[in-house]
Length: 255
Image (cartoon, rainbow, N blue to C red; front, top):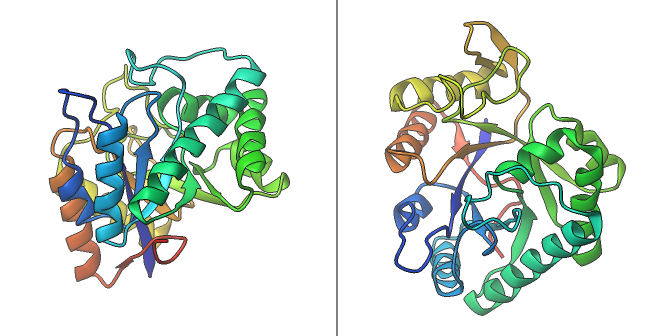
């Protein structure tokens, strides 16, 4: 058995520190690196990319709405021309920094409100798909497991990887529990590790009402900004290794 483990990194901004990139990069196999729109500054992003290269961690572009103040978690009705250009701009910026760090951008994972919106909203989804196709159609798109976006992107010719969230609660329908609701964010590292082991073995996650929801995922995310994120990710990795589950990126070795 094999599973990718990813985390959102490169999100510190100036004097504002977010997460522990160095520690997470010792654990994960893929890094979703901020591109400056929801978080991250150029120097910090470059440092994270160099650290990812040193650890042979695969790099993805964590593109977002232009929303530094809201950390990319505010819903926005962005015109298609702007959204396409914004996504191209972010990927291109990260590609340049990655080249300077000696690595390459191999996938795209939208962030926050953009991620959740395009999971269901066909118009904005197609904007993101068209942006990826325009800059590099070989890039893999990471998307929420079970979302309509997966079918739209595959129909358009993109390779898609479905993602589950280790530290988030699920509804009985397989959607993420809103961050405004109880049970949205999980903190018990042992419980989280067991949930993810069950996902790998049986393809199911326990929803907030106790029912089991089927989730087909090729990657598991631990949010880098969650309290105890490093401990959660480390516990998942240790549990997986004990149970014979290999941690490996869905795209192979880092570029």
